[in-house]
Structures are given as structure tokens and as C-alpha cells.
Image (tube, rainbow over all chains, first blue to last red; front, side, top):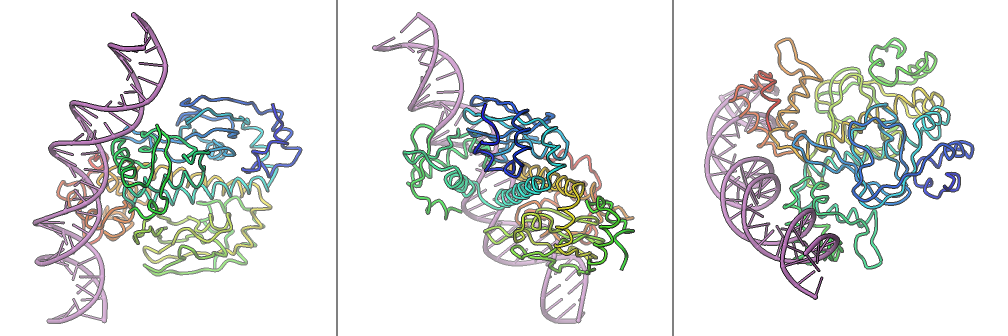
Length: 225
Length: 225
DNA sequence: CGCATCTTTGAGTACCGTCAATCCGCGTGG
DNA sequence: CCACGCGGATTGACGGTACTCAAAGATGCG
């Protein structure tokens, strides 16, 4: 397995603040894991004894609501760290993680990370900053969820995916989600999400090929309300 | 002004992890501020050059949504620290803070806090934990907002205020909010919030006296959906 | 007492959730 | 090669929820 030292992925997260020495130690104790599409990485309420570093693929972080529906809280791609929060606050996970396509990950044991947190202030500060960013995003999502219509939220998530995760060579969104996933992100019934996506298609804002979606008029989507 | 050293408030937040020495320095450079009900402490987009420590009173953290309505993201009482996130990530604030009643606060300059963050790992770790807790709460709010009815959310906020902030000697919620504030927390139109509160009153779940609200049947509220 | 603000209530409408039926793509087994 | 069945996608219909506009009542302050 490759050394963390020379792993390009670490540049995307706070592991970049570790010293060469610390990275070597991390390398020595980390384990690689592969998850298939749909596979559960961890479940809400589990005790994690480490963090996951996403090398490839996409996963969703979800939380089960009292009405029995999953709500997607965040999408995580290459470079993301899973389990930070639980590790830091020394609690069971409050979210579940499920692979949306085939994934490759590194698992770093808790002890190693905690040691680095206590010894390397720069690293700690970096983790703090990442957490601050997550919090800011969560606040923004909260406001969107509370104040915008389902249609506006649907348009927004399409643009978000387009802007953050890009498109494939044919112009389709590179992250492919089921209608149910879209509904679970937007926080609505599957049928509602479907209805809105069909409407967008009719209006020429998007086009589809199987499950794949292509944005045809991003400017049009921007003004949905 | 009292010394932070002997201030009981610090026990409620991460300042408790500072050493006696550090607390003396904080004491030396902090300034006391008083805010009247309705006064703005800081506004979304401002640059903060320090954090506020709430000694007394309550304030709301809000975010303006695109449709022009404020959404309350969090209520902060005695012991809370305002501005952590902005300071850590060195960004402008993403939230506004407004006093809900008369408040007494201490303002600690950025430089002092940042020095402590870089020198005292225990303090940093504590801030990290607080941020992790905020993040967890934000995720929970997000799910509630996405999946629960306005009525259920209204019942929940009443119970939340009751459980977290307590009641006065007559049994009324010790935090008094306008109907508009309730609407802004729940994320709905003021009239909707009002309608639901009246319904609760009719059903004997709550009673009111002016703006003050008393919970009569907390168990009944729990099962609203 | 009068004005300003907040609260309450009504009526109409649009949005959204649910149930149910149908359709489509795809893999399986005959 | 085709019938079959499964799961996801789609559409229709209906009822309930929540938003808006509007008006009337209550409250508090000067």
C-alpha cells in the first residue's frame, strides 16, 4: 500500500499539516479498505475507533429521523475525512456513512490521530478549521431547508453537485444518485423529487440518460424559487 | 470589573481549560459590554476581532435567507461563547447575533485567544469539542427541519426551551420570545406559528400570559407529529 | 386617550405528502 | 431468443398542510 507521506489525497484535508515523521507513523498503522456501492461504512450510534480518509469514490452521511426516513446531511468525496467529529468528542457517531459508488479508503486508528492532536498544534488547528467549515455549511443548509421551497432546494442541489463534484466527459453530473437519494438530500418524498426533476426536464433545464443527469441551463436553475 | 480567574461563568465553556496565568492575561485585556433587548451584537458579514462571553441574558444567532427572512440557528445563554467559529476560521461572521433581553457580556480580543489556542492544547481541544457539539446539534436541527411538520417543530422548540433554559417561579418559560421569533426558529410564517400556538392553547397543552408561555402538558407536546 | 406594535383569526390558494397504478430497464432463467 | 419478474421511475388523484393577503382585536407605551 502507498505511503501517506507521498499520498496526494492528504493535500485535500488536515493530514497535510502532519510532519513527515507523523505521516510515517500514520502510514505504518493505517489499513486500506474497499467498499462496494451501497455498502454501509458505519452506522449511526456505532463507536468508531478511528477515522476514514476517502481515497476514491463518494459516500453520503445520513441521519435517521424519527419518522423513519433517512436524511442526507453531507456528501463526501476524495480527500474527505469521516469520523472526525465522533473521535474528537469521544462519542458514538451521530451519522451513518453509506458508499454511493465503489470506494477506496484508508482507516487510521484513533490512538494515532489522538496522539497527533495532542502533540501537533498546527494539525489540531487545521482540524478545528475543517470543523468550523462544516459548521458553517450546516448552518447554511439549515436556512435553506427552513426557508426555501422543495423546488428551489432541488435546483440548488443539482447546481451544488455540478459545481463541487463536476461532470464526466459527456457533461453528465459525475455523481450519480437515485431519485430516492435526491429526495433524501432535499428532504422530501421521493415522488415529489421525481415530479420536480421531470418538470425541470420538460422545461429544458436538465436532460437525463438513465439515472444520469445533465444540466442544460444552470442559469435557469439558479432563479428557481 | 471582576477577574476571569474567579468568574463562575467560565466553568460553562472552554475558558475553564485556561491556566491561572492565561486567565489573568485574558482578564487584563477583556472589556465588559452591555446590550439592551433587541440590540445587535454583530451582523452577518462583519469581521470580528474577538469573542464574546455571555455573562447574563439570552441572544439569538440568525442567518438571513435569500427570501429576506431571518432564520434563528441557535439560542445562546449564560456561559456561551459567540464568535468562536469566525475567529478560528479567520472569516467574516456567517451569523448575526441579537440580544433577546438585556445582556451582559465580556469581550476578549482575538490576539489573546489565538495565543492561547496556539499554546494550550487542552484549551484547543476543548474548543474543538465545543465545535463538534455545535455541529452535532446543527445536524440534528437539519433533520428536524427537513422531516418534521411545522407543528412538531413548534412543540419541540417549546420543550427544548423548557428543558434547556428552565422556567421562572410561576412556571412560565424563562426565555420570552415574540411570535415572530418562534416562527423564525421553527422556520415558518409568523401566522402559521401563531395558529399552531393557539391550537396548543385550545388543546390545553400550553397556557399564556401576555407573551409568556407556560407548558401545561409536556407529555402531550412530545407526541405531536 | 391615541398611536404603534403585536397578536389573532378568516379565506383562498399553492404546495407537498400519500396511496395507488402504470411504465420502463435490466438481468434471469427457461 | 423471449417471457418473466424485480426494482426503480413516472404519473394521476386526493387530502392535508402551510403560505399569503387582509382585517380585526389586544396590548403597551407615551
